[in-house]
Image (cartoon, rainbow, N blue to C red; front, side, top):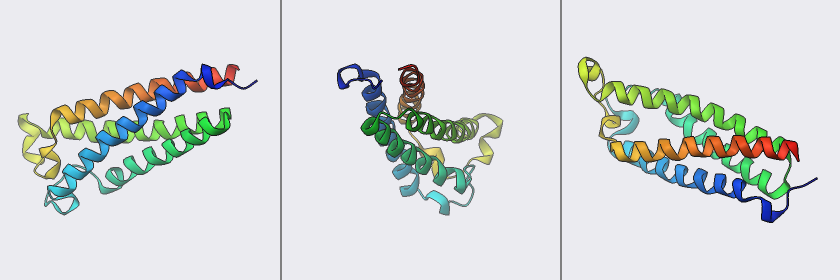
Length: 145
């Protein structure tokens, strides 16, 4: 049994949160690149994580859109799996950024990543958590249907 378009508010809320989180993430990536990005002499952000985080997020978003078009539960769970990868990478980036902002560990963090506006990081993180929860509950719901 497929969920009707009228009953898909949760899925479209997840899409909206995901798109907004991607926009905030793009802002952070542009900020990082304009401040020196990977060419900074010392950075705490591994290039593979910096590149992998937006790539996995974008791939997951594409899979989520495929789920919205087809209604197939497998796509919902695959998008959630991509979000798990994105979440781990995002948590790595966040903790490294937090450690580098001050305190005795601040001396290790001298790169473009230190110029991130805290508000933008908070918005991106909040939208990401919201997306994670909405996609998870949507995947559970479509599996039950």
